[in-house]
Length: 198
Image (tube, rainbow, N blue to C red):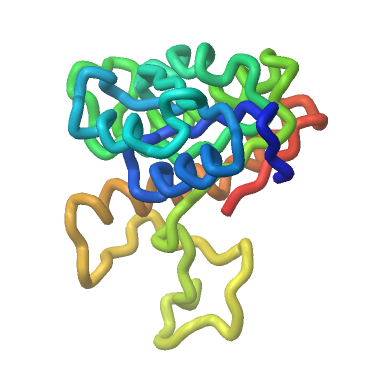
């Protein structure tokens, strides 16, 4: 990505650690950053972003939620690059549309990619996953590990981690499904948008 003072970049999930570091770097490079958060009224999440050097001049905060993916469109409008870092950590019990966070996030990703296409300005989408999405475990259930790891090595959705906690239980299936399915979603999106999944 060659960024200049004229580049507009959207970063979803702006209050997360990676997103905050990314926003800081983008602002240092002179980019205008459209950053999304679930709740703009949460000062614990917005204050660190507003304090970043260059934020007053080039950071615009937008309220957006993966359970209501249409809310991302204003943040995407006019941007050349979109970083998808948002991940729903808790299932919205009021949701009648989705049974879990994975379903909500995968549908949101599909909708966001359509918004990127409609924008006519987005050239690249960068989707991030998690190390929990990949697995060196043998698929035959045998002991040991695969000889090598590549893009075909996914953690089984029913895999039990020895260090399980609520965060791993939520993130592992989401990142696995979203990372492995983004290429299928991309098939229906204009080929002029380059999608990178890391």
